[in-house]
Amino acid sequence: MKKTFKLGEYCVGGIIQVMISENKNLVRVRNATMQRETIEIRQFRWELDSFKLELYLNELTTSYYASKIRDWVTISAGVRNQFVGGN
Image (tube, rainbow, N blue to C red; front, side):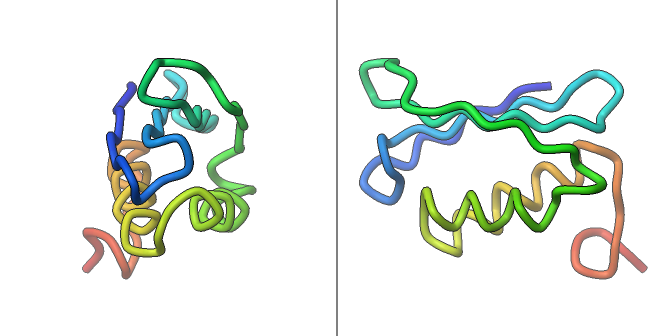
């Protein structure tokens, strides 16, 4: 599963591409420029590194967009909690 967030001036490089592995436990974040040049790729184990993922996203973009990306990962990975889609 893959989603590209084109955030322009709100993000280092302008583009954040998030990929979730098929078994939904590995999240890969690719930071790229508008010319499709990769700046950096980092991988996070979703269950263990979710806080590190959020910190990294906050380094790349604003806290608003970081939370939007984190919410998409949470829902796409099939995890529900009290913050996103929980009861």
